[in-house]
Length: 171
Image (cartoon, rainbow, N blue to C red):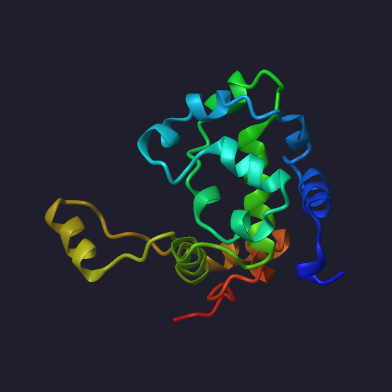
């Protein structure tokens, strides 16, 4: 079935079949999650209730194609308070995993993944920071053992994900 032919129930089934998404259909949109969410209190760009609603309505591209699902702080306050025991934070993880499989990841996370694969760290160590370490009396950073990290990423399938820049190329 072509992507444009998918129905809302197809997306719901896909979410339910993804680890963490099993409880999504228990949601009856009471809003407890949104009122419990510290991120939703800080920005109107994130509302867990809205994410769940859009997912249940089959708004696949709206859910997976925006950065909204990446704003969740994983504090689990929504999940602890949900009267229907919807595992909301876990549903968000399921949505993120679906997005990752489709290569729909915000650029910053793709850059983190590429840097981890290449350097063994999430952030490259600049010459400026190396000099600051010396100024502060800190020892130089030791090599990270990139091969061990690459082996783990390969064993878990992480290196096969369709996120640009994650092919393990060396600098």
